[in-house]
Every structure is written in structure tokens, then in C-alpha cells.
Image (cartoon, rainbow, N blue to C red):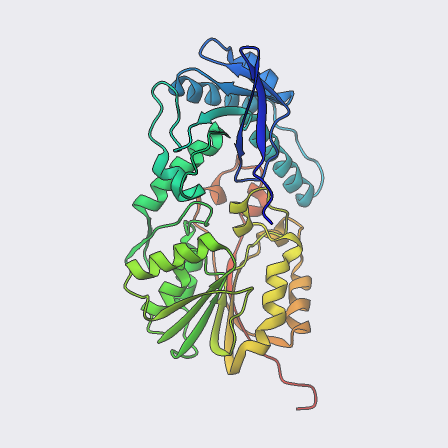
Length: 381
């Protein structure tokens, strides 16, 4: 039995009000809520938000957006603490700062009608963006953070315009909550590595379907693309249909591997072993390297003889001190696998060359690799 959706309660004009609480990150409803409008000073809003008091906006939408920017500037004004410890300590401090920023800015709330309309002056029409993320409206009014609304709008634009993929000569259209393939180096690795066979391939954790599409365009006759997330499955299906690859690529709901074996199995798991704080971060953060270890542990049983597993992985976690190369080597050996080869590339994203990034020391030496893995010879064979 499904539990009822969470609700937010507040007092306004001496009356108690209740509405559905929406949070894609799974944040609990704030316990303290005050009404705010165009007369609310940014310093006051920032102080209340830092104290854990939410501000339900009743003024002009664009003024609320300016207030959110002003609150962000106040967070940025605070001097960044110098972390003198290890790279891992610097990473955790960075994550804490990100969490504080998200919690503080998430305290500015917007009302939402039952059809996802926002009943504020100069509010944009976000109904389509909300429907894409939340599903069809149910007619019940709700309250949502402005930060989430802006995220919905941004995701809608990504979905509408798409992300250009050089290896496809086309675009991939990511859905809200499905990681956008904006880092092209890992796609180029899959595009350029020699294929061990062109009959069947599995794409594990397909997301938008981008790697399945690259394999199909390279001539793999049948690709099985798996994922557990309903949005990812629908997103991949839509992308592959739009690219004219639906007959060549089968999208399957599965925890890692589909039934059977293949001569090529590709996986691009989350690269950093840390706890995600929102659904979209599951594409980046993998607690205790669960997906990575699960892929390695099950790979041999799903490879055909002489088949290859392609593991696409950044070594950023190693430079951050979150996972060692010895651990990775041990997981590969324990799974009965051997390294057939490795193709490396350097990331091209802006943070890799930004000295002001808190993790610049690790990012500046990051390498993304395609590990070619095969079944190790059995003992005594």
C-alpha cells in the first residue's frame, strides 16, 4: 500500500493551511514556514533560511528569483574554509558545503496549483516541465522549492534542445532525473575502441541510451540496454526510437545484467564512491562502489568465451583518496577477470582546468579509462 504524499503546514492570515509537499531530492517538509513577498529583505530571508525557516513566496515571481540569487551571493561571500587534511577530507568538506548551499536555497518556496501553474505575478508557464518530471497533475495544490522549479525548467530545456553527441552526429535528449551525457570523453572511448564482435552487446545502466546508440551505430547487430530507473528506461526508449535504432536496441528493466551472455558488455558506472543527496546524483555517486563491484562480480558469468567487458571509469576517486587502484585491481581479480588492455583519455570539461575549483588538485590529473576485461584462465587450466 502506497503511503500518502508528504504535506506542508503553515499559518497565514490567522488560518492553518496544508498542501502537498514536493521534493525530488526527498527532503522532508520544513517545520517552520513564514510568508515572504517583495518587501522581504535579502538579509532577513538569508538569516531565516540558515536557521531552518522556510519562506513561502507571495510576491512577484521574478523578484523571488532575484532574492534566490541574492541569498546565493551571501553564501558565496563566506570565506571558504581551507582544508589542511587529505584529499578525501577536502572532498567531504566540499560535499558538506554543497549540502549547506542546497538546504539554504531550498528554503525559498513557491505555491503551485493543481495543474502545476504558479499563481504569482510574472510567473512562467512551467506546467509542461512539471508534467515531464512529476507526471500528469492530480488537481491537488502543492508547495515546492523555487530551486527545484528552476531545475525542472532547466531540465525541460535540455530535453527539448538535446545534447550534441559527436560520435552519433546527432543529439541525445535527457529527461529530468537522467544524467545528461555532457562529458564526451567517455563516449569517444566507446566510439573508438576496437569491437571484439558485432553480433550482440549489453549496455549496463544505459541512462539516456547514449552508449547503446553508439554501439548500434558502430554496427553491433543487437544491443540490450538495461536500467532499473523508470525514467531512464523511458528516456532511453524515446532517444533510441528517435534515432531510428529501436529495432536494433532492446531496452530492458534489469538490476545490472539481462539474461544470457554477450561477446561485449559495456558499463559506465558512477565514478565516485559517495552517498548521493538527490536522485540525479546516483549517476555520479555510487555508495561503497556497489554498482562497480556488482558489475565486476557478475561480468564473467555473462561473457561469452573470448568476450570483453568494457568498464568506463574515471580515476578521480583514486586521486581523492576514496578508492585505491589496489582495491580496483583486487575486485577485478576476485571476479575471475583479467585486464586485456586499457585506453586512457584526459577530460576536457572546464573544472579540470579551473584552479578555483575546490577539487582542482584531483581534477587536474584525472584520467578516464576504458578497461578491456576478459575471463581469467581457470586455475590449473
